Structures are given as structure tokens and as C-alpha cells.
Picture 1: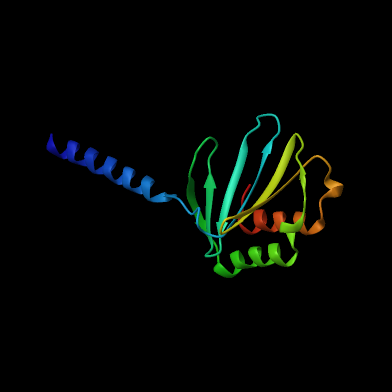
Picture 2: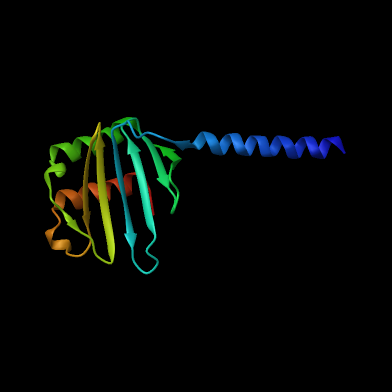
Length: 141
């Protein structure tokens, strides 16, 4: 009887340690958060990429992010480079619709957010291009 109990205890210990290790707090790091929400269910899909290439996902109603995958550091750096070169932080874009998309940039104590969905024609092509490349390069559905 000791073997099944020992196995069960080991399993729960492993699962609890693995889960705790995945949740991250990177509120002090430069990051790009992007995603979409709304529609019939109102659900929000939110992702966070760091310059080092780590990609995290925030589940609906969760407070913290969970590690999803790692991409090449250079690819992640290019997202930040594009964001800054296209001066997306200077845009005043807050036009959510029933289904909406967003990109949020955090650097130190600053936060820049753009949201669109209602009128696709007013969204600069640089924003659409960055969002598409984030989703495509990170292979997110």
C-alpha cells in the first residue's frame, strides 16, 4: 500500500511545482501585449511577448500569465523595433467594436494602448501588419 500512496504524493508534488513555476510576474519588464476580444462570447485572448523571446498567455479571468513558448530573440526584438520605428505609441486609436483587437506596449512606468475593430479603414496599415506578424510568427490561432 505504500507504493501507490508514494506515487500519488509524488505526482501531486510534481504537478504543483510545475504549475507554480509557469506563472510569471514581469510587470517591471518591457513587453508587448496583444490579443482580441468580444464577439458572441465576449471572451478575451491575451498574449505577452518579452524581448528575450518568451511568450506568455493569460487565460480568461486569470490574473497572471502562463508560459506558452519561446521564439527566437531576434524575432521578438523585431516586434519591438517595428513598434518603435512605426511610432505606433503616438497613435490615438481607441475604436473597439463588437469584436476588437489591441496592442499594449509597456516600458518602465509608461503604457501605450491602441484598440480597434469598429472601423478597419481608420487603422494604419503598420498596426495591422504588426498585429498579423505577431499572430503569424507566434503561431497563435
